[in-house]
Length: 145
Length: 147
Image (cartoon, rainbow over all chains, first blue to last red; front, side, top):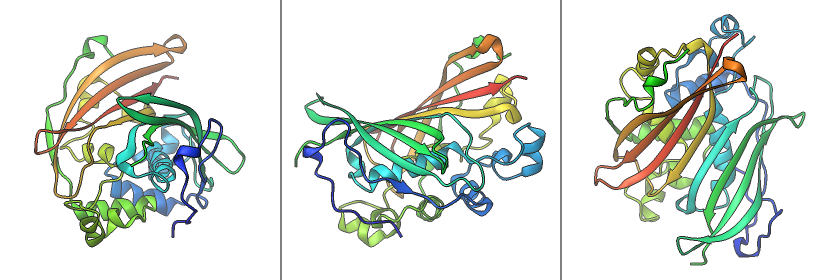
């Protein structure tokens, strides 16, 4: 079940403020197999340890897009999805079986664009050692309704 | 090395249906529990025509094209050496189960770093729905590791 937090007061957010983090349990091979099937991304480096070893990776690695999907949940747990204007990530380190990922979002800027009050958020996904696996950026519309 | 002549290379346009069962499977795989993504009644109560597609699923749908790695072969990208380096989405309209989305992909850049040890291929996708409405663009950056 998703954790439930009190709603974020978007108008009151200032640069440096953080959204509630999304904490994931340690990654399992079963999760990678389920994501492989559900996502349609059948690249064997994510599920076939023989292939991953031969490719020089040592073992299977998580789909970057699985980490990005978790980052997306960190956003959509708090903001209506229709208010996300852009969302991008850079996959800076490989995520492996056993890594426990935490996704965080921090307000990096407030600006007006296309007639909307917008926030720029810096995102990151770190493992249990604090290593950054994925960096991200999102722009959301926080205009009062 | 990947020939820079492939900048501008277009994959054939592809139209793919957003299936609700697939969206539920995807939701399960990523731990998505928002009712509008998994419960049709909740989606309709929210005024949506069907289950809401989560923000990164567009990337997955594109991989449903026949032979999703076919363009790797044509361009000369070796699958075992490829990693996903960056991914970006710009959103214009939501997409729902039952939509038919058309993907148009073009390679917009090919460049090297670290003296050729790393090669980057950037592909831009423009996505429209069955009403001709722009849904999103996404940019996929792949890195090919040499040595």
